[in-house]
Length: 231
Ligand code: ADP
Image 1 (cartoon, rainbow, N blue to C red):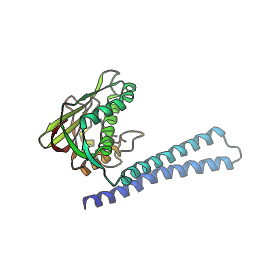
Image 2: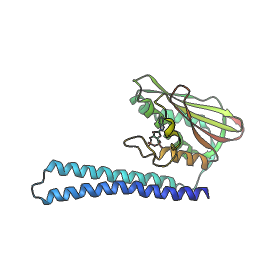
Image 3: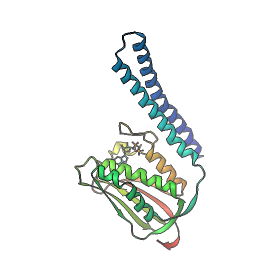
Image 4: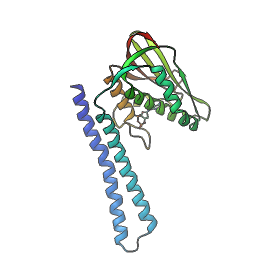
């Protein structure tokens, strides 16, 4: 039932999100047509108007693409996942992004038990969280920000925390952080956190936000451990 309700709410949110770019596209294409019909069109103005329409088409396309990624992968492929190895791979893959943002990326991965999960889905979650943390850290002077991916064994669960030293999240924004399309970024889609929580919960775990201990943000997820093996 929970899923169906979420899907219904999501459908409405998607309709809303797609109708915004469509309205903007209509405005810019209408303006371009009027300019061209006037016979004395300022070429630069038409080009600018069409470029804006094009950007909105791309944005709507991206929203649809993200939704497709989520719904198309309905069938999970569940295996034993070594979260430490996954964290190191992701740190390696996002190393260039971090360097460009002037952010140090550190992994603290002591041996922890493996978990049973869809590796690609968990990778997507971790990439979302680390990308957000790098973006948050980019606000600090170059070289001052560190993003930490920290693993820990917590009883029957394995924990992954992504901590940054960025501006953190204002208390009034914290309540709606995981709602689809909640974003504070000019080019954000606000789907990353919502999607990440759906994916972690779909793998039997949970994901939440903690204010960072030193003022930044800290996102944590836990997944049930697979067995007694420690990797
Ligand atoms: P997006 O990144 O497209 O905005 P997300 O769902 O990933 O979408 O994030 C939603 C919002 O949560 C962001 O716009 C930002 O305001 C806030 N947020 C997420 N991660 C962080 C972080 N590490 N530090 C500060 N704010 C964050």
